[in-house]
Image (cartoon, rainbow, N blue to C red; front, top):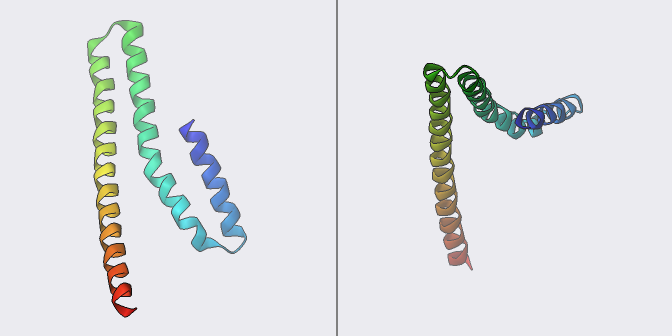
Length: 104
């Protein structure tokens, strides 16, 4: 499902590029770039866990769980970055609103 979403965003980005709106594609390309890694980690985890279940192999299961750990780490770091951006945006908004209120 995630790969389909990335593919549709890529098609939409190409549409904007060919219609002269290349600047509009930057957020779409950023979302695609950030979403590819979790998709690949999820697929890697699925591959290893399926193989571990089929062959009752603990080493394969450990590799699958390692993929899951990498996915969780990436999502945690991404969440921290997103929260920092939201806090900075909130501070900028409050300070801008305060300076606008002094002008009135």
